[in-house]
Amino acid sequence: MSITALYKILLVIVFVVVVFNLGQALYFMMSDRGRSGRTVWALTRRIGISLLLIALVVIGIATGILHPHGVYVR
Image (cartoon, rainbow, N blue to C red; front, side):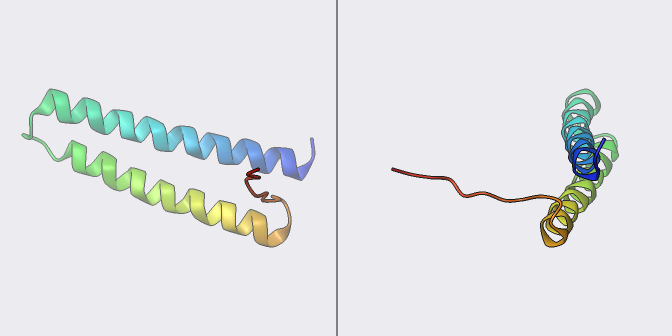
């Protein structure tokens, strides 16, 4: 496997973790009914991991591993 493929797999894994934390926060919000700080903790983790994901995308573009493309409108 090339470094590009591994990097893209890493990005997908980090994105799935972000979505998982969002779902976890929703579950905690519905089950705890505000009696616990687990919802806030899950959302805080999601924000931190989202920042990591954005940083990985920026690093990937800066190093040439990822190649952004525009949306073509006719």
